[in-house]
Length: 128
Image (cartoon, rainbow, N blue to C red; front, side, top):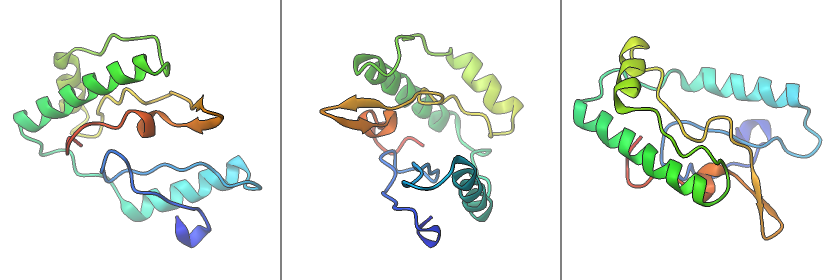
């Protein structure tokens, strides 16, 4: 990202994924191209071999994150998918489809500054 002139910060979830906001003057198409280029250089994140305990810990962390998102006004939908659905999607996709309560949520303004859902409500601990 830095090679493309994009300011970066560590992911608050301490995960291997990334996201960014396009700097002023960058078009959405340019931002998408940079994001795709960086994703291609990183490759797929290897979630296919998680243990049952890791899967359950990841699910529980996401449920807690959802409660935080609701409490801070990012969403009003406080109903997580069930663990059985989470596990089914994970297995069917060979580890590529993990429920993310932050997906599709925009930013909110806090004290005059836009704030993203993962910044306000990071997942707790080392749950991927």
